Image 1 (cartoon, rainbow, N blue to C red):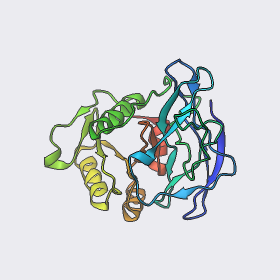
Image 2 (cartoon, rainbow, N blue to C red):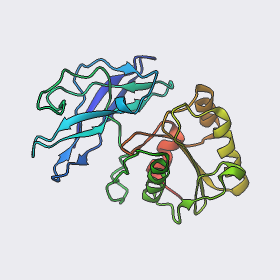
Image 3 (tube, rainbow, N blue to C red):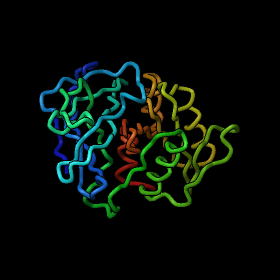
Length: 243
């Protein structure tokens, strides 16, 4: 399992502790892209698909493959990337490239020791449909029953439903706006349900502030399909699940 490393947001200076999630190589060996110690984090202003992956070589079997570039959504709203250690990165031609300038390893949801959930197995995101599947898979892992596609998004914006649950998923490359967060909250109130929002590109600053005031759980989905809680409401939902 990867170790937690301290990283500092280049936008606001806030320091975080992050642990990279571990995923199995095709040979079965657990592999986690290591954050370069002392590497310079960078704020990602323009997110592109090609820059969201890094090629790594498995130390066990030597297989070279693409893995999601470790990134995280800071509480200030900045998307931050940390460099991967050069010893693990691979250019695909047998040569080891210089460290990439930016990419922190995404933090996987780690339930406290008191829970009895099995290890979370993420669903890699390559399409908007994958983002919905990843969010649904995570909500089932939290303990929600009967999680399914809502089928009525045009009516109220809800993407997923479950037992006393409504959820929205924003797979776009722009930060989720305030209106979408308020829409989820209104649906929660009207249906007396727990809500959760999942976004690929993070949240607008005013959306983050309103979510904190309304206690709406916000998650950011990295390309591994691992949701990262980005506010206290999401942290509590991850710890407790449906109650």
